[in-house]
Image 1 (cartoon, rainbow, N blue to C red):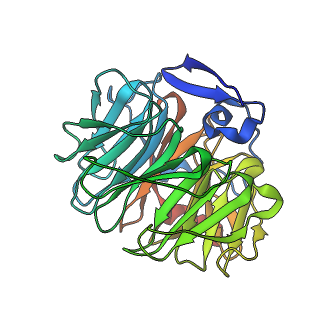
Image 2 (cartoon, rainbow, N blue to C red):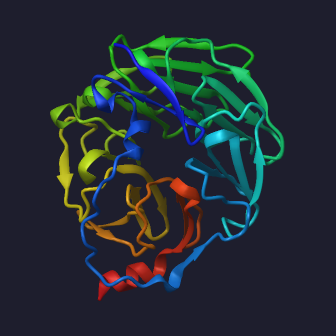
Length: 337
């Protein structure tokens, strides 16, 4: 397999002989968003208009702890918000790395993954960052902090990297599949789930020391994102607006009805329920077994980053500096009518 890497808007992307191999190329494809079920009502939408967010920004991931939210994207851009996405402060990491993932750790620090296989760590609420090179030639696509404090990354050739000492040393595990791992989630200190190319689903019950196959996604579905609430129940999203749901640990999957054909790039949950975001500025809310449209500004750009707290607020961000702070209560009230 060969790839041609070119910089675009400061963020490298890959085009392979099999397009879904890397999800980053897909955010550049024009996709049509199906018509909304309800008339747009933007009274609950506030958009960041300060110079912190620029039209040249292309955001990829967002994470929050109790004090701040951290948003990352192309050209090493890092935005930090101390007030749940209402205002932001901007900085740019040295070397302008293309940042593709970020997570909040149990100790309040943050890790951010670069497309160049370097992991950045901030112990001061996103104000300064130290960098660690990952010991692999495989492309890492996702990074997370486990509840016990370990750092993890996953990606090419089903490679998993784990560090118990904040990047000083790493253990390498492979699931022995010629596939990309695209999502990694720890449910608690022991339980974790990974999904990947060709519909792969694996789980761990011993803090990532060993992994077991847990069913397969239909039609070798390529998952851009996943959200599990237990080893038994979870959702995955990807191309064509497809969202699949399992309640038996991945042994069977049911495709849920969605009003959009735009790719799904992320899930986020708050007290109002589960939300999915994707291309063409689409935001969906799960109502029963169906997904319904949440009104947003109609923009032909992707939304990829999402984070929500314990209140009714959902912060989403994506291409061309699009950064929205949504109050999910009016949207739910409109759906109930």
